[in-house]
Image 1 (cartoon, rainbow, N blue to C red):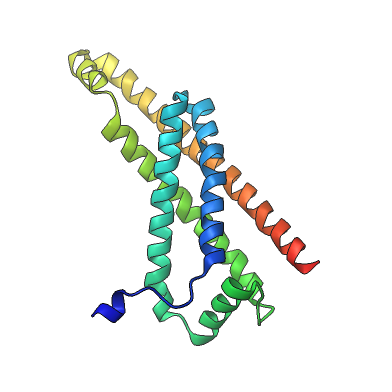
Image 2: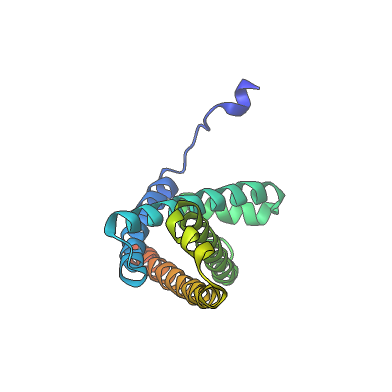
Length: 182
C-alpha cells in the first residue's frame, strides 16, 4: 500500500509548470470578462474565475487519470513522447489532438458554466428570493423572463471568457513550439 502512495521517480515538471502558467493566464482574462459582462466587482470576478478554472482543471486531470489506464499502448507512448520530449512519433496524432482539444474545450466550457451557475445560486443574495415570494403573479413572470435573459448572458459570457483564455493558451503553445523548433 505505501508504494502506491509514493511520488513517481520522474515528474513531468514541464506539464506542471505549463498548467500553472495556463491558470495564471486564464484567471485574469476570465475575471476581466466576468467583471465587464456580468457587472461583478473585481474581487468577485477574480474569485469566480479562480474557482471555475481550478475546479475545471481538477475535473480535467481526474478524467485524464481515469482514462489513461484504458488507453492503448501506442496512445500512451504518444502522450509520454509529447509530455517529456514535445514531439509526436506518429504524424496522424496531431489530427487526433485537434479533435481532442475541441472536445476538451466544449467540456471545459460546460463545466465552467455549470460551476459558475452553481456558485451564483449558492453564494447569491437571499434578499432577492424574499422579494420574489412577496411579489404578485405578474412580477413573478417578469422576474422569470429576466432570469432567462441572465442565464443566456451567463452562457455567452462564459463562452467568451473560455474562448479568450483558450486562445491565449493556444498562442503560447504555438510560440513555445516555434521556439523549440528553431
